[in-house]
Length: 438
Image (cartoon, rainbow, N blue to C red; front, side):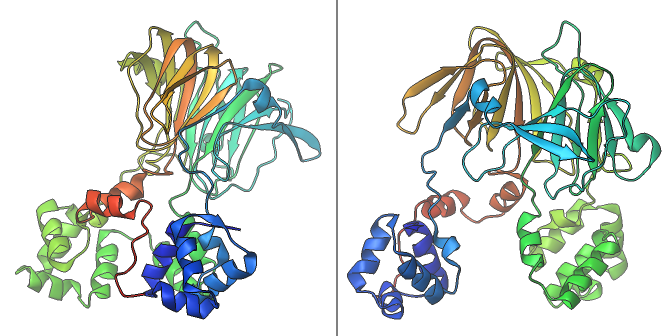
């Protein structure tokens, strides 16, 4: 396997082991370990396994990604068609799946041919951890079905746009984790969707949660079943710090009733003082905003998109469906007309799908060179975070994004980090040891 020397040094620092100590534990010469730390390189599996055992991790935690210096990936329409995967469900050919451009191992949007006929009840799937944003590409309308039978929230037509402003291709919606869903045609007209199951902010927690004991898991689930309000969250955070609501109020020179009222009513000044004094982020004590229906989805139709058409940096855009409880899922309809728009540079990865025309993507590669690629309908592109790029020519695109850096939780953490720039700068490709003699 190929060992990532930055990951190896990170774990040496985390475990407070010197290079000499790990060399002795693994049975290598010190010079061999120093070589591993000088460059990411192929490593015999037995040595990688021994390193992992010495550091009390799995070998996979040392594997190099092989994706260094990625800026843009392009997948042509023909290459997209080559990814076709027919899906059987409920005894019929239900979908064809196609995968858009993305780095190996990363989540990518998929395009689905909707094949379930209009006169047949479409069988529900079981949902998935990742929340999703979905858009009807047309040309026909489709029926969407979600969750249990809850009337209007369960069934809805997802319309395509047959009019002149076809760059707004159709209705869109956002769905939460593990929401059962399915689609069928609404008429004899064919239809497709693009669906982006973006990275879940809960993925890391769920992965660890699978290893918890049943009593511990049940304790968390019991707490969540109570739908924790700010007062319950505060009680949890305070107990971690050896405080009750009463003792925390006393530390602020307040009455417990004042603190409880501040939690119930969202009084920012007192909540900020509480977090600052006791060492946690007061924003966790604010009630979240919600905007979804009974099955958790947030819908946006073509008419709403038309009302929001605007100029953005030389492009004409309109927003896809979005939801405050899923802030990392974003999307735009984007129209390119003639002269190149100004530069775009996104804080997280972006996925583009060409829906009309032949626009040209321009970007700056890892060596600082200007690159470009002219794309046709059904071609797609993946653009890495903070990579400068722009579009020219004539065409329409769908732009999608999720939380794979820089996402909601990253921003939450970075805005709390002392000397954030210095911390992240030091962490990039860090080969500096803990500081002890080898």
